[in-house]
Length: 159
Image (tube, rainbow, N blue to C red):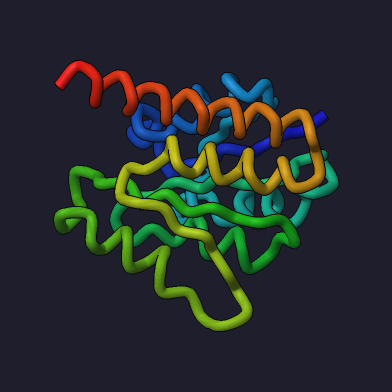
């Protein structure tokens, strides 16, 4: 069974991160969501990151706003791929603080980073990672891509 962890620093990130949950449900990939604050619950974050692969996760999607340390800190302690979602929070400087905190990782600690509030793309990227080894998921991704093409074709015809 394919499984993706969707973690966030605060419950206020959930409206953004829900897009990852929703798209992964479309691909029939199991998700588990949790609040894992790098700053307020560092011990829990360390335990979560160190043990995620033992819990059967294939990929971790980590969303965070402001200083946005969660994706990078989790990436530093897990062998799993981590996809960071910068979240524009109420204390954010137009989201740039979150983007740069996730994007500017040091060598040896990669975090795939999507656009500001781009949780849907994070979910798709997680499905693509899983699809490398799971032909069923890869087929669903190809079907999804075909649906996107059909939508654009329909819009072109309506013009």
